Image (tube, rainbow, N blue to C red; front, side):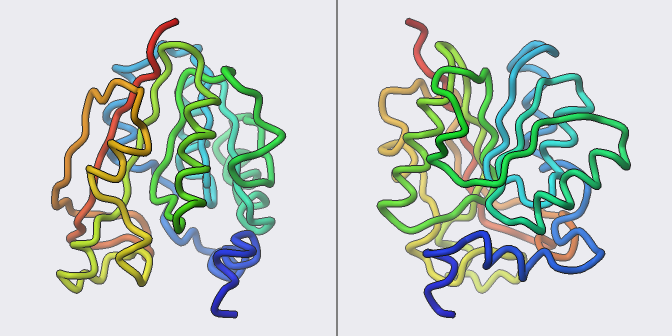
Length: 212
């Protein structure tokens, strides 16, 4: 059971998402909702990686983006479809994790990554696959916890180990070759369901794939 999150993230998140409530709420990540409209046109193709129960993917579909939601949890993908139906939108839902054979390279204008934490080298594989999924000039929008989340004994969520979290330097290295339009560590107030609530130490990034 201890290794389950690494070897079978779908099963791990099945347990977390099992129940009628939405663990991280139904509203999108605040950073994503703030920056996305200024980054891409309404008809953009958006990939939400590790979309959980669909809060980001369904919101993107509501904005008119052509949205694909990628999530390894069967329970999560079922709840994504339910949330989409509840809010009257359509999006493609794929049960898988990155890297995924279901995701074409150079197919998306945006990749959304919020709180998709994994150990190295899995983290590097995920981030590399996200860059490959982007078209020329496309952007990755990322938010995740920093090690300060554990050092400050925050109760607002996140992995149990510091090595599973991000720093600005880790992201700078993982996304080298991309133009970093934003890369900043900060403390924010999260209000994302019962799973992310309260002060949190996070890093936010906007990384643009160079035009070719």
